[in-house]
Image: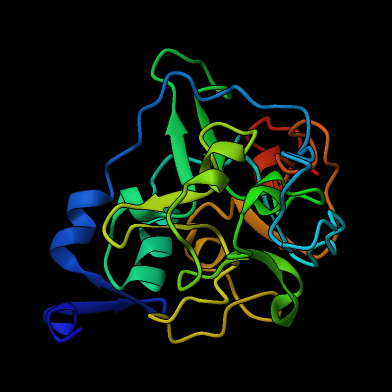
Length: 241
């Protein structure tokens, strides 16, 4: 950690190195095949689940992230913040939220945000053979991965019905990780989780991300890709909420 504290600039509670922030802030993740989404979370493999007892019933999460892709400018600040507060350094590859840009697409279909939906019926949780991916009762039943239990089988990565998958493979530590709504953000000086703040929501300069305790519509993307535009956006000709 000592190396990460050198030449650090504190911005809104985040520790960004000036060199790395300038280096990465202009990068947008390129991905042409970004739009393929299944219709809901599904049951995954009904023969195995993270509970290890054959019971596929999982308590619903009490926290969710919503996004307005029409407001998102693809600056990847959310990705930098996510990796920084969880890993202690900026890494677009280890961010638990992914900004995906289609260079051949037209607005508003040229940018999408891939963030964990905290599915009511989480396929990833149900296929975990060791219970590493579980509904965290201490954090509002947010779907969370216990890295100490994870055996690196990547079952959760493969089971996610959305593209790109919402479980991220940590190639440095060889285990899976996913959005925990910052409950495990040990490098942040703020309280995360459902009763605290989320780094991506806090740092987004366009306010294109929002936290909610209401369960979004599970079919399709309409429940998660929402209208967060106010009257200022209305003056620019956008449809406002």
